[in-house]
Image 1: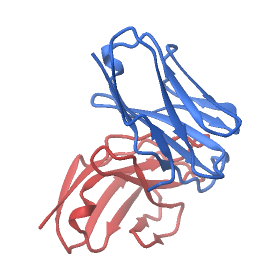
Image 2 (image 1 turned 90 degrees about the horizontal axis):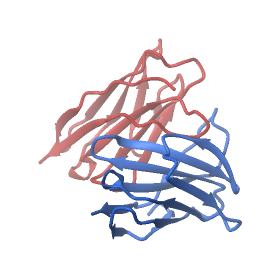
Image 3 (image 1 turned 45 degrees about the horizontal axis):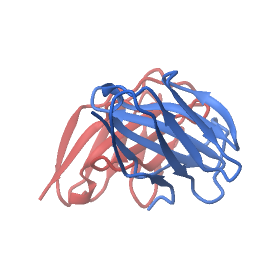
Length: 109
Length: 116
């Protein structure tokens, strides 16, 4: 699995876009990038995943650089309920997820 | 609500004891995963079962064991408990064993274990 690097914390004003970066320079060609989030000791929640192309769903957008060494998760209009720890995970070996420390996103009013 | 249930929500016990944590996956999901989350180690993968068979092991101690039953629910058994075993234990399920493709995991609410 690819090692990922994320800033430990970020903050964002409510209603603004939150852009969470992730470096995954060791990711291999067939490994996906997954994003999960965990709201205050609840079970982690899947957000989005991607391989090469940018992806968008109802929760977020994922922008992956052309060399696939980094990606950015975008929450277009952050709300207070988006305050959580966001995990970027590279690869998926036999279904298990390797969580790092993630980024604590704080959305302030 | 992810559809994954875990019982009990909270468990307080003493060192040296044995406990069993239970997980019911989403309807139709064949894969069950167990994770441990402690303050110092973060979220760590413990073990995976697929349709009753063990498929992958992570950082699971020998004092810990798990199984998945024919009805697909799973139990995680923790024995000879130590203070350091205090943590949140999450169960997750998914509908595919294949790791090469999209594989969203649905997490339960967790069991908080406190060892005194």
